[in-house]
Image 1 (cartoon, rainbow, N blue to C red):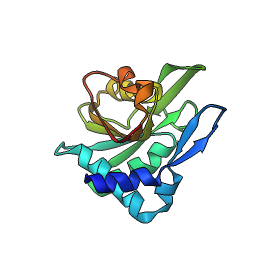
Image 2: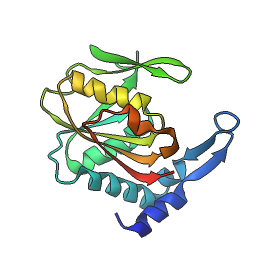
Image 3: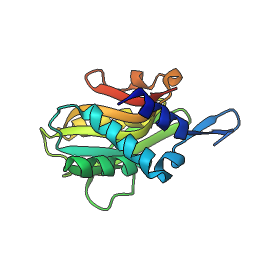
Image 4: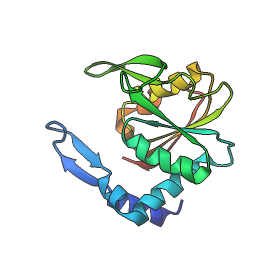
Length: 177
């Protein structure tokens, strides 16, 4: 992706002070989503990170990962699999629990959503501490999927989220703060 395109994406990210709590500077992606050209550029960037891998499924994490992941899956002509918070999917699921800075959480996926050996790419909006992303990737491996890469629109490098992702997975981020 050209530096000028990355700069345009960066310029589309809005900083929101003290959200969701005092002292946090929230990186708001909604201006990127609401601008057709910026949204297209973000999807182009995600697709570039796939490189020449033969991907058969895209996973996206609840909820903003659904937005980007579904668009990437459509462009690549592959299936999209939602990774959701516990209790949100209507069929037989596999789940995995993980720790958050403020407690525990669990994500789930339909047990038949990923066939063993399928090449999977994760697409999400943000890599912060890596807890949710790491759990989602482990869940894919639990189902027998081969995770090709994990790609994020934004990475908050100072939170060291990559340290909580499996070492054998390529991690890409379009924008780093």
